[in-house]
Amino acid sequence: MSDDLILVGRVAGAFGVKGEIRITTFTAEPLALVDYKALLREDGQPALTVLAGRAAKGGVVVRAKEIETREQAEAARGLRLYIPRAVLPEPDDEDEFYVADLIGMDVVSLEGDLLGKVRSVRDFGAGDLLEVAPVAGESWWLPFTRDAVPEVQMDAGRIVAVRPDEVE
Image 1: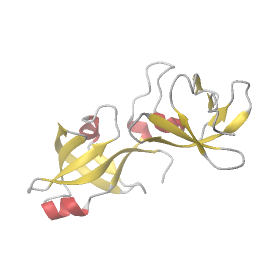
Image 2 (image 1 turned 135 degrees about the horizontal axis):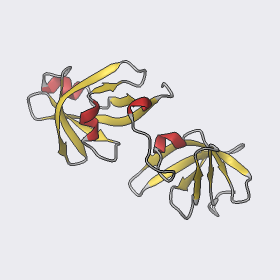
Image 3 (image 1 turned 180 degrees about the vertical axis):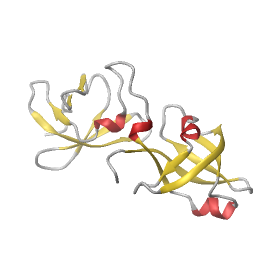
Image 4 (image 1 turned 30 degrees about the horizontal axis):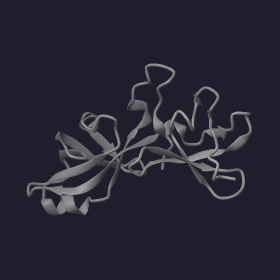
């Protein structure tokens, strides 16, 4: 995957019989996906061109130029949709950032010791978790809360973390 692409959604399947598709969105505002219009595949190739859309439970329902039938919509199930990072506006203040920008950042203790790097950011339903790949050993999960991550230093490329007790 290109480093300058941001995952914004995944095709969840067909909606109705006229070729509309359900998309699970990974954006703060689900309808933002409709505004991006040109959605890309993981390799940067065109995936879908959104013609129209509306909010639906868990995301949006869209009509796309490339999908005309229910069968085509079902065949697209699972397709991951991306946009270039450059089309996103810059955050308004220093306490705002895109979760995708955390990937690859150093994770350090309150004392400044290197704990690892952020491998991925996931939400399994209870809030964002940072997967931390340590210098040695198995990766571990860090809740992305103020208690566990008191500081994100974007300019320094690091996250200050309180290591969970169960992680050695």
